[in-house]
Amino acid sequence: MILVSTPGTWTAVYPPLDHAIWNGWTPTDLVFPFLLFAMGAAVPMALGKRRTQGWARWRYVLRRAVILFLLGFALNAMEAKPPVALETFRIPGVLQRIAIVYLAVALLADALSLRAQIAVAVSALIGYWIAMTRIPVPGAGAGVLTPDGNLASFIDGAVFGRHMLASNFDPEGLLSTIPAIATALLGTFAGTWLGRTEYRHRTLWLWAAGAAATAAGFLWGRVFPINKTLWTSSFALFSAGFAAQALALCHGLVEFGKGRAATPFVAFGRNALPAYFLSVGLDSVLSRVSIGGAPSVKALLFRLGFASWLRPCCGAEAASFGYAITYVALWTVVFAAMYRRRIFIGI
Image 1 (cartoon, rainbow, N blue to C red):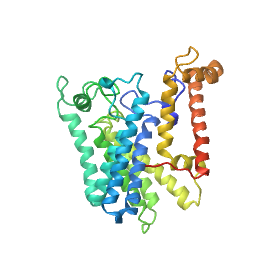
Image 2: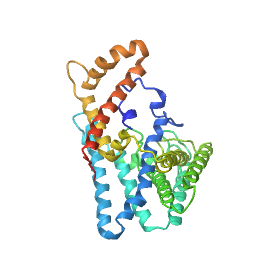
Image 3: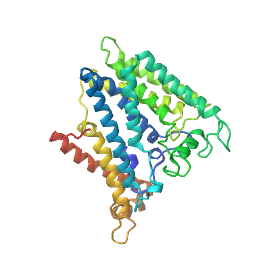
Image 4: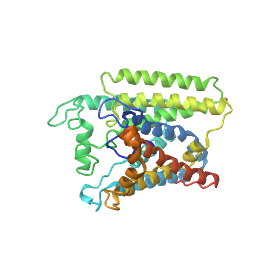
């Protein structure tokens, strides 16, 4: 997520490291659903440890959700052009969606049986599909999936007004959070399945289920296009299938291969929230503070450290990618040091 969120310049990015313009997908489009899927997979274990705490565990869940939401507001403030204009301040965001999805999945996982949770996930995906393709939008009609004419954008505009990322839609909008909840629920099912140690070959079965989900999402995309911004039902199923395969692969390597996870991955994993918040926050600050006549500190660093020598020989995309890789490497050093000193920041 850090790699794709902090290129040297957004005007020169390799296509796999950028989001699809609208319909379709790139590897970058899988990052957010992978995160939600992984969060969902951790819910059974996290809530299981607190099952005896009664209402205390719900205070814990609610507190985490509220803090995540407020941190999302803080990031929006950092990313906004100064001075912050309250009349156009963005309300949705990545951390805001994570907060809502986390709260919803925690409640559903605790209150409902596994069959009921499956019914909720299926209903959310099919219901969203029906709503997006059958409910008419004023001035556009039914089944229009353009940025201006789709139901999700219409609802977001009615609820948030000018408080969105773009003038006509927000990729972390209100209605599209419903299938995002289904994505995390699919992760919950995967986490529950892997926790059932009495089943043999459960890792292989998880991988097979993921492959089937990816195929089903791809086929569904023929009638309901795969679209990350709208978080279409086909995209939710397609991306969750890939995430299930990745989880099965990691589970097999670590559990059955007697392997050890590489330190950089563990270091980021143990401090996932501060890694995202601090890296994106610093990038926003560097992008908005001017120095030495340059548009920003980031632009100056990019020009002197990468564009000046990488662009002439390898192209603008290589220079932009070189900056992003270096930025990730610097944060790897920071969080690896924190990991060695057992410094973990959570909420």
